[in-house]
Image 1 (cartoon, protein in one colour):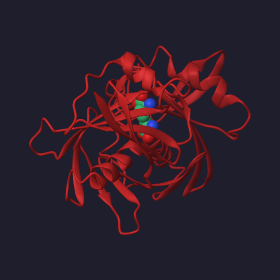
Image 2 (image 1 turned 180 degrees about the vertical axis):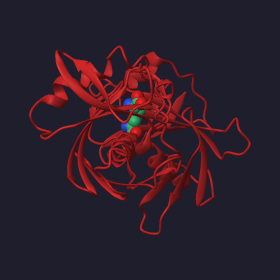
Image 3 (image 1 turned 90 degrees about the vertical axis):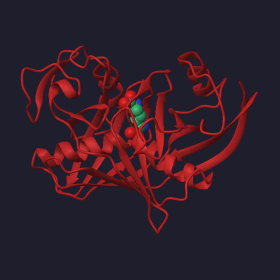
Length: 276
Ligand SMILES: N[C@@H](CCC[C@H](N)C(=O)O)C(=O)O
């Protein structure tokens, strides 16, 4: 059987998107790893799957698989591509799309300028919700990595993030510490490791070593986590422009239990089909 897919990206964070509302496929971690291979497969950071919702309040169910085959809770750049996909494929007529994810419900809206805004829900800071091993909730935590004493902020955007403030994003720290943070034993479900340089109160530069995918050109939930962590620390103010290697996202957060809003582009690259 041939399975139709669309290759998309959000600021260079790239995806294979499949519609399992009108098609059928039996997914497995091994199959996802084969497809994600950039030499022997299609090549992508994440596989995004559109399914019918199991919750009647929602329009779709959105499932996300990292390139390493692991199924995860949330993907921000993917959420914008999800909106563009379901509209382009005429799977919905709605302008405001309610989506069920393993990380909680999110709401997608296409703006008149073509950019997509996502209500990503409220961030969570309780160590057990991230999950992160710590005695009590704090704004930042000391963490030892490869003999270095870091100060990290831990945030759940549905998926786990840790954010480290740095002065320089190009001195090899991201490559060296990213994989070690991802596997750090105090993050029992692994973690997405963001490295943030503050430019001014409304602007940061960010690189993210993603759990299960390595460093990507952009990470939407990573941008949300970094902006939220910086606001909570008192160093940033909403809106925050997050400059990633692949482009800039705008993040808004009013604090506390308010939802985080992420705005940015979603791009279709090509359509394909693969034998399953
Ligand atoms: N690229 C994504 C995040 C994808 C999932 C992440 N690697 C995880 O394991 O949680 C984004 O744009 O948010």
